[in-house]
Image (cartoon, rainbow, N blue to C red; front, side, top):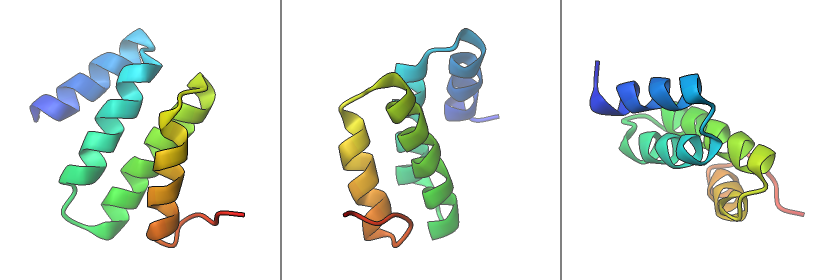
Length: 72
């Protein structure tokens, strides 16, 4: 298991939403396929929304650039 996977599991176990946003964003950046990147970005976005985190806007833009979200 990778260090990132271990960190994601630990953040889920502890309920650390802020860490989850950053870790899922990191996973999206490191992903080798567009579908995987979109999956991880979506998770980062949902956790950012749940937290009320300012990173949600940037994550939404990234998803829109991938054609996975619309900006209106």
